Amino acid sequence: MPEGFTRRDVVRGIAVGVPLAAALSDPAIAKTVAAGLETISIETAGGRTVSAALAVPATSKAPAVLLIHEWWGLNDQIKTVAAEFAKIGYVALAVDLYGGKVAGSPEEAGAMMQSVDSDAATDTLVSWIDWLRGHDRANGKIATVGWCFGGGWSLNASIVTPVDATVVYYGRVAKTAGEVAHLRGPVLGHFATQDKFINKAMVDGFEKAMRDAGKPFTTNWYDANHAFANPTGASYDAEDAKLAWSRTLSFLKETL
Image 1: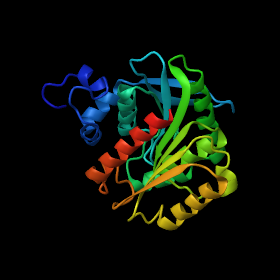
Image 2: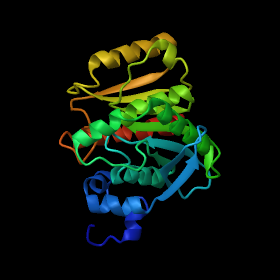
Image 3: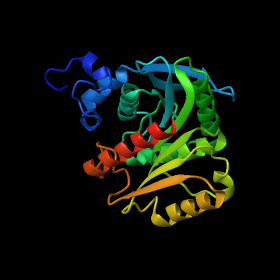
């Protein structure tokens, strides 16, 4: 932890001069921030018990943001982003689609991602969105935000149970016009020109589907690679990550 900062300083939203990128890239800071979030559990509509990490703002009523993790799982970095959202003024809920597991290697992450049951993940996300709608600190406005694996699920969740805004960081967006027709709010996408997984062909198809369905969207391209917004990874691009974050905050401020 940087000299001069107490645990309380850090937990309170990386407030006193600790930038988000610095907190995300420092495991000690991220762990401290993550420990300050409340772990909560609910029973889903499908009768399953699921958990998430909650961070609430100082304001009494605020819009809510549901965060969906990368293929690594609900780690300290994602919880730190939730804490930052709360500092800014959102009720932030970081959900867990891996049942408490966090991957330690790309191979493990890939296997865990492949093992996710689509119906169970949908049940989890819909149930948490319904829970957020009824939270006493939330004002009813909800956005989903996800990265990589979670980026695709951010869009999936918004299609199944329409919310007010959707943010996708380099997530799978291969959808038809019929599918995206169920969206209620606009979609903001962040994509990377060097990404071989979520490539231009896929995003072009998504844009066409959105246009055909008459749905509002904004796609931003960055001269970077997949996972460019993750400070702990080899593909991290500080400048593009900062720009994407500022665009995300502007988008949420306008839509929620």
